[in-house]
Length: 198
Image 1 (cartoon, rainbow, N blue to C red):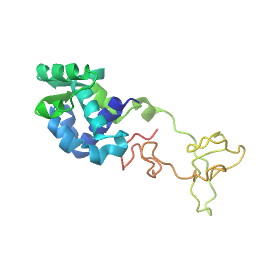
Image 2 (cartoon, rainbow, N blue to C red; image 1 turned 135 degrees about the horizontal axis):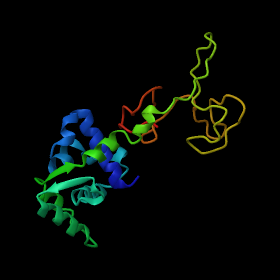
Image 3 (cartoon, rainbow, N blue to C red; image 1 turned 60 degrees about the horizontal axis):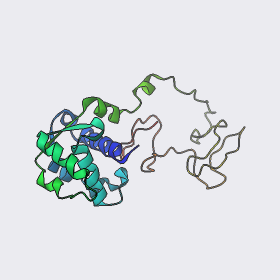
């Protein structure tokens, strides 16, 4: 996933969490930057190293890169595109065009909310029943698994594996691939960052 795709996905998820109707409405550049997806509050989810990187990705969105959004007026979109073509783009353009309106592509927004819609109809993996007297959680990693999701180390086969023998990762608790928050069984999205749970 590119920085721009991650930025767009987080923007759509933040909108969906606050007011889903806003996804289909024009958003001002200032609103995206200061209210919906401020850098400081979303730095971890965006995986951007600096506020300058954030401004560049916002400029790419406003320039229409990837067809994820359409900026109005057209002069503002062209100004973003022209500035990005420079070897050292002036980030001040984001403030100069802070009233420009960004319209998110509806198909791209739907995909950002559910990146694998066909998975909703895929057959679920069979659940192995445990004796009622056992109070332990059903392990996340079965005997068929070959690698630890954290360190990639090989896992023993032919038996239940609760912890990785290389790094000690608890394999009975699912974690978000984006922010490492604990996930409950059956969740489709992380409650901390909104990432889709595959």
